[in-house]
Figure (cartoon, rainbow, N blue to C red):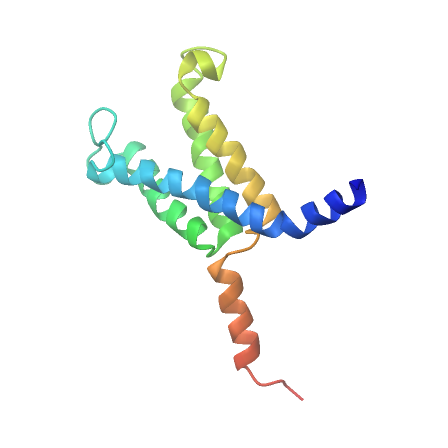
Length: 145
């Protein structure tokens, strides 16, 4: 029975990783859209001006990076950028207020940083548009003799 569960888990891994990637990046993109455009309950606080450092750039990374990772395009590099932006946010904004994320309001930044680092390391999993496009290119291109 343990072997059966192990085989089932192994077969489900790409789909579960893909679903995790989709959910994490959708939430991330929604946060960026809320900050930039005031949707989904709006920006928490004052919306940043276009080009303002770091708020506007962070929101742009959240929206664009979240959408690309969601779709499964350039997943590893974009997930690494998303992870790094959240690590920067944690250490530059939250850490100075208290040691622990629960105390300094940095839980979302810490969770997103680690989730995107995992996605960058593990890859897109299943349900990724980038994998589908690469597969179509291989089928469409003639074999070189």
